[in-house]
Image 1 (cartoon, rainbow, N blue to C red):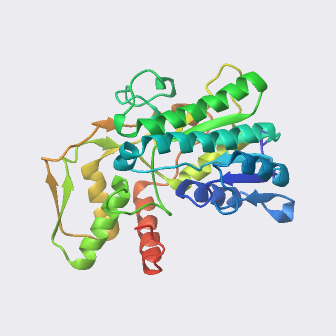
Image 2 (tube, rainbow, N blue to C red):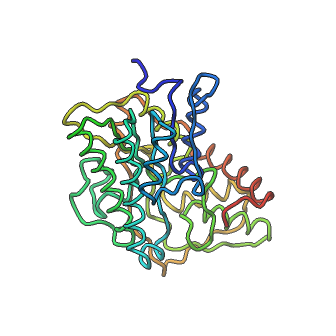
Image 3 (spheres, rainbow, N blue to C red):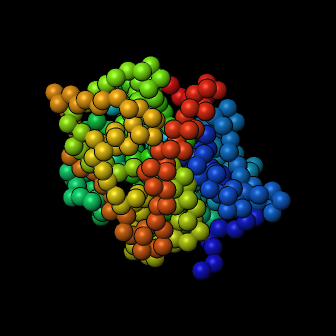
Length: 329
């Protein structure tokens, strides 16, 4: 099958300095895309160079830089507290970014666009593993519904432009991500980077036990961000939904594990050998959250990085960046 993107294409990755965006850039470069020697380009403007919230600025940037392929990995993100405290900000800013970048790409004659969504778009009580068809079949998780609603709107904007105008826009919905560029803040990071930081600090301080919330029984799925980058390039190269087909696909490993198993794996990766205690008075959250990735697998893509391998490289990168004071703490 001939690739739907070319070596001499001009690629615009919005959000290229984020965890997902930087992985997508790495994947593009590893496959020879965006290479100036091949007359291609990888365009990664920062916030000072391009304000994605400014409609006119985005429109002018498109006219000047003329990208052929766009990947939208930029978003306003945050934890439960931020989503609950600033719901209007999360909704408005993400809607503005998505509208400016996606509509702007269509108006500018961009050939292909990939929108990066999130697994939070699915109903809180969706049947497991979660199929793409579960979208809009039930109520969302209240703690991040504002962000989820914005992401759903992004998917539907891509879908509507494709249906009405033939604009080649597709979307991918990744599961929980980890890897280089993650957020390790103790209060607003996700479970895997939070555990990594806690076990690393416990090891360094020779602390004999670490207490984690809940029973450790909830099941979760984790995807290394470099696998996501690879999936994005794969989709850009090969996936072109036929009329009437879904225009978004889940991305994950197809495997889950308990939080207790995850804690054990992170402890091994960090070299922590102390006890792991569980505070069962604290909430567990949703018992299971796993994506059905059979659709993407049917097109020929599967995750390649095992959890053990991914944790080992992520811990090494975390410690390297920590020593250089580059880690987001």
